[in-house]
Image 1 (tube, helix red, strand yellow):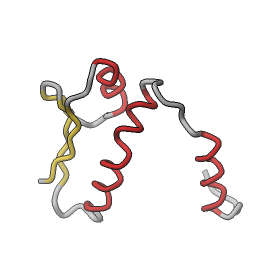
Image 2 (tube, rainbow, N blue to C red):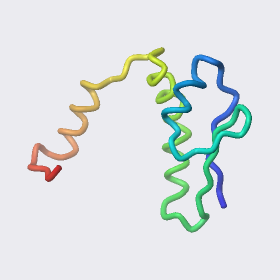
Image 3 (tube, rainbow, N blue to C red):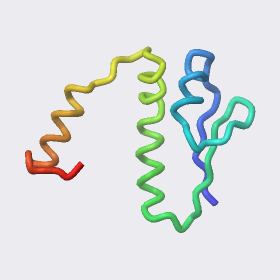
Image 4 (cartoon, one colour):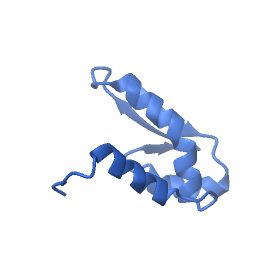
Length: 86
């Protein structure tokens, strides 16, 4: 089992962590979730999680703005403007 965990959050991030880290178990001041080592692309998942967790928590706490315009532009660029079946 490989564990993803977030801990040592101040009070301003603890509330948003409760909402944002769905599926994670809280143990003291840490939220964690185990994944089987056989999970496909687990290394890449960890890279994305560790690179993004702080920004996601700060945005959820409304301490940093969410770059919606840039995100939507990136989505359009990646999908090439083609039709998507939502």
